[in-house]
Length: 214
Image (cartoon, rainbow, N blue to C red):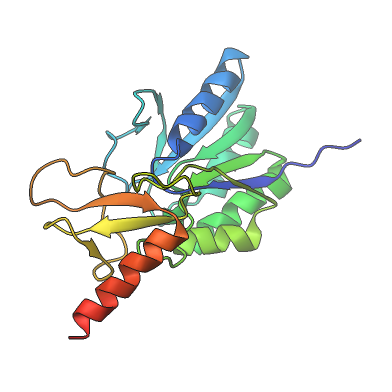
């Protein structure tokens, strides 16, 4: 049976160990003596430059990706000009990819026969798809939801949304789509996120709409 390289999109909420899985995948390849290419969009500034870091304390070196950088040309150069046999391309924070870069990743799989594994958020704090996530749902071959549970005390439902909290500790549904933050309030007066199931997300949304309609 002929194996065909594919583009995988492994998506989940914040705090669902997406980055940890990527780092462990990278480690598994390198333990076998294979070359992998971890990539991280530069818009994610929570990790140090040239490094993908998980909240659990593990990390791997990476290529920092600018929005206008052509991933396909980079991987093609590694394989055809430098003679490097790339076993896999790993993308962290894939929701920040551009449409063009997602298409480039599909070309990596189709033309260079190299599998691509993308890890990222499905939707923003309003529940809307990120541009990169939307493109991946359109162009990827395989999809896997990385699951975790709602962080509301006593709730055991699957977390589906990332609820943004303002500086006063209240759920908010207004503001810029991209605003980096942690899943807990690091300092007083900073914004943060809490992952919730659909029931608790919608309860917050309805309350926010009612209060802002007054």
